[in-house]
Image 1 (cartoon, rainbow, N blue to C red):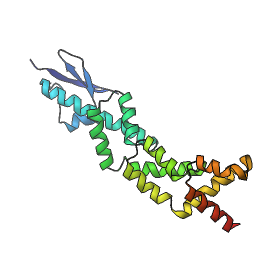
Image 2 (tube, rainbow, N blue to C red):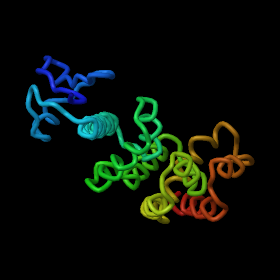
Image 3 (cartoon, rainbow, N blue to C red):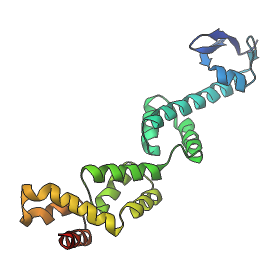
Length: 201
């Protein structure tokens, strides 16, 4: 007696795999075609296990794509979300590797967008930004590359000046340097930014 059997397609769910001594599960039409299956086909326990794993990988990939379609993610963020959806790490890891190879998952892109967003809203120094990226799981290499690109001298001047203007009227000249330090700007960045400010006046 076969371990499982493929039943007909149920609209909206796919093809049901009826396990004789276990729980049934569904496979999507694309998996049905990709695996060259047929309705009524009987499966051994090994074939059933492989088919279920193949479908789970497809599902994991599709779910990851849903998240990536909304915004860029780090591998850490995607892993956490996919685990919450019930996927196991042995399926998640190769899925993320595939997405990275296809350039659909890019922590460098994530880092660039994160830096740009933060700097438009509330500018911060390089050290603090590096800590934010690390906390989100961005690799050191990708973070360094993005920081190097967006923290050239001209950009630093712009960030410091913007942060200065946002706060100087609230705290006064005496406390503005302390505030800039709290925003993660180094002494070098502050000096560079404020010197540029003076020159432009």
